[in-house]
Length: 103
Image (cartoon, rainbow, N blue to C red; front, top):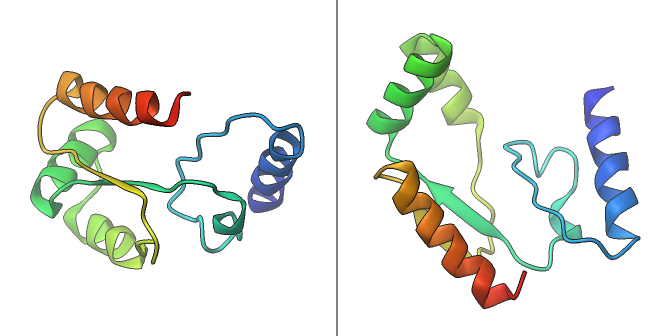
């Protein structure tokens, strides 16, 4: 049900020519890749990703490994950001990409 809702929302905005930012580990499962003009991949090393998720959500290492292992990277990526620093550094990188895209 959630997958259908997300897909419907994206299609609703897509057909109205709106800019859409999709933060989705399930992009392939709900077939959103075909709708994307540009793909931005944000990567974080496993150790740091686990530290952040554990602190934020209390996820065990085994659960993190299972979830992280199930995620796939897109075959075609237009932009990639290494998210190894603080939020301000991430924001600066994302802002630069958005400026390039004129969004």
